[in-house]
Length: 114
Length: 111
Image (cartoon, rainbow over all chains, first blue to last red; front, side, top):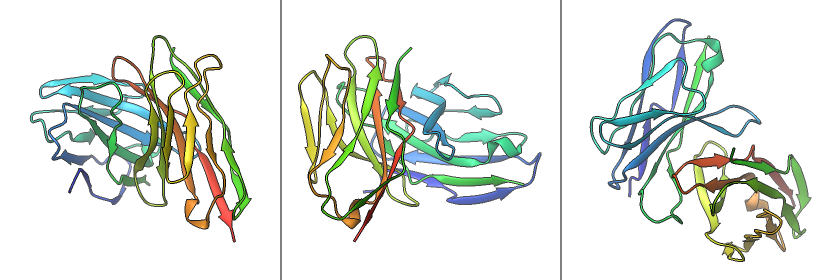
């Protein structure tokens, strides 16, 4: 039962470097989401997708990009890493049907920008 | 806009004490409400949910009732255990499949 898988679990970047956070789900869920979690701040939505080929901005999209070429994968790209992007990043998925369904979360990627 | 306001922590309780974590929401329409739990180093896991007014969600001794008249979804447990130490998040799901989360409440239970 893989569920939502995020890689890597930890990463340290230098300012200005780029990287891609990977997220894949094996539940055939239509909806996928990227959040960042800062200490004491809850979760803030970065981007989300309602299906392959469709993405939209969330609350804090600046400095990030996403793509959704398949139902399973929803990578998050940081092009020019900045210290303000130090955070824990969570990917989540949702079936998209039935208003009582919860999101399923990955275990997170802990990213430090130095 | 839609939002969730959650009791700030941290909360420290002795084992077998009664727990309440307050959560209120603002939303148009009829959202579904959730409590998630996050253990150290892990992602959020669903604890319980309620989908309409007066529904009671329950799991592992935790309960929460969807109160539309007070726009609340408070989490309660009658007797906490050390293993309940975690961060708890209240969340709502809109009819447009957007989720809004509270800021989280850290609970520490001491023996």
